[in-house]
Length: 64
Image (cartoon, rainbow, N blue to C red):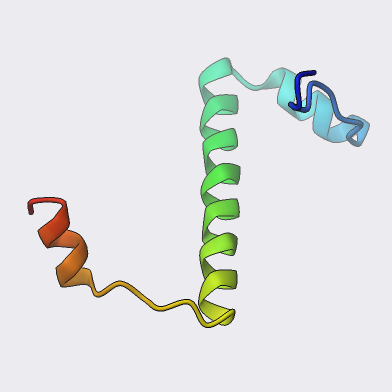
């Protein structure tokens, strides 16, 4: 809907496990999935040869 996935077909066991989880646990699991996807994307950009940003520069830009 409007370019966003609104449903997915998953194994019954997964659907059952998700249905038994409290909402906060599901939210945390989805955040973990998003973090893993971001890590894979970052790794892919490194493997593609994109330059790394030095940690000191990141801290300085964040005002730390």
